Length: 295
Image 1 (cartoon, helix red, strand yellow):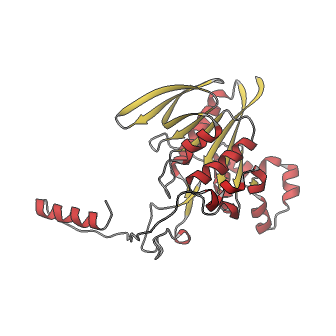
Image 2: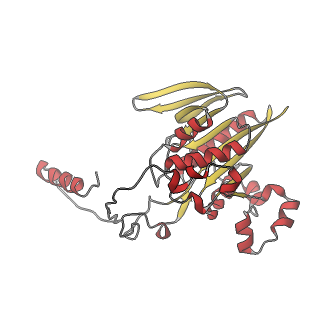
Image 3: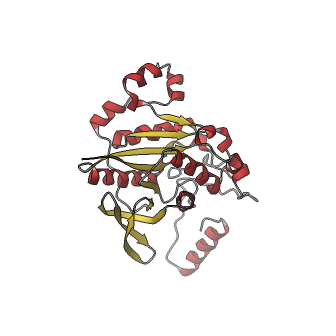
């Protein structure tokens, strides 16, 4: 087996579960009431994790492979790193700092690029195509530009993986395309990709005590003793200073996108309306949906 360690990074995000919304899902100012919604692993990022683990499976008999999860957000985001470890990831890092607050996609991709650069020579970066709390699909491509990496977007299936190249089927508007890229490369994974594998019982047992410094403090755990004995259980936390950034490119100061106005769309579950198949009733329903900015 080759002694070189093959480095795979998966960018993941903890997001509010917007699939199960009720009348309290939105605040009066039109923003998401995150406190009223449970936090979940962003669905596209879970599929990116699966593709990363499939790459690991394809290479593990030839070379040592390490899958690292990087997430930017509040310290509670360590939850999705632990979840990733239950499924096969090796370690994770939470990037968290008040100085990241207010980041648009440009500032977010800059902070993440600085974190990935700190990790050293990375062979592949995987990310979900988009997050369900933003739906911009901009962070992945922006990150590839900042890291000066080739990029494959809308990835749907891993076809072939070697130490030098990757072959991917990607979803296009009018069909499917198979592409090959030399490494290193950044791949964004489409929502139609394979579902992530379930937790493995042995990995849950091994990694259930994995925690970040913040979690250890909150739970009264002797983190130093735990990590000295089992260093793989440490979920690292990095702040802005740890990634050596240009501070003017972080948070609001690094975000050229400015919100001009917010229109509150009230989302209410279990509403229904029965109409006939008459053209006039269908037209009236369409007008109602358009005027309410639902479609």
